[in-house]
Length: 342
Image 1 (tube, helix red, strand yellow):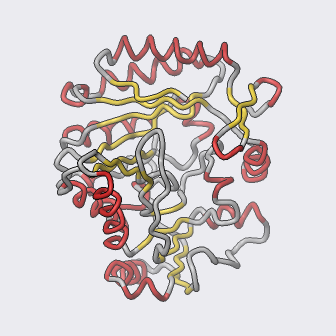
Image 2: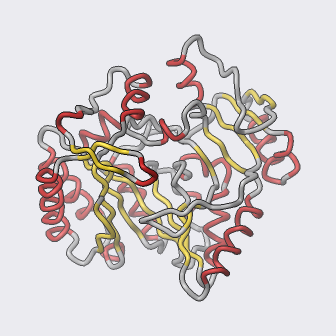
């Protein structure tokens, strides 16, 4: 089982110590014997240890930066929610295909923000603007927040905040099984707890540093028993040798393990593998031995949002993905809701 994340190095903004969480984290990491360095800004961490880019990238992935989130204007987040709520940035996982590799560029270190109450106050303003409509917030657009929350408990605080909200809802997704501290949170059914799952091949070769499928499913069972609404994102759907059987086994394993209570209000989201030219360059630099197939000649070019083009599977392969996974969903989870396929 993948152990819960412990940073090898911590940077702290001086302003973070003005907040109770900042002071608690400094004491926690000091007591753990972890080196703590100062940084003027969580966006300006430089001189990470390492003799080359390859080493510095890996150092960054095990570095936690404790800072204050200054920008409290939330990005819109579709199709999963109305807004992205910025509780953390970055991830300790080493998923080869991850879009954070390009969006985070030279800052692949993990950032957590201590001004949680200010972030939640900003969320409340968005909720009021849309009331009486439901407003959903996605907490994992720029991070796998569960991966660090056993240290910070910022996600737990947010879950309990939204648990008291009339029209605010929280959502997040994780590849980590370290959920025990979240099971007693007073969520009141207003947070949808989602797990990213995949065929064993994808997890084994393309998602190093994350929890196994079995561990993710075990965690999902605990989460369902704790009364959370549950969801699963199958992403990226990746065509590898034997993919049809690989994904069928994934659905079968999930259906066998989940208690009936979890199947009553279950959602799925499907995202096919895609990549951009800049992403391909970064991935090949960070993971030179990757098995990830990124052959433009085998893909279809598609214009994305903001004018950025990406390579997706050709139409006939997309149709087969949708047809196959649709069969599996009907077979194993006939009452589940597919929110989107993209």
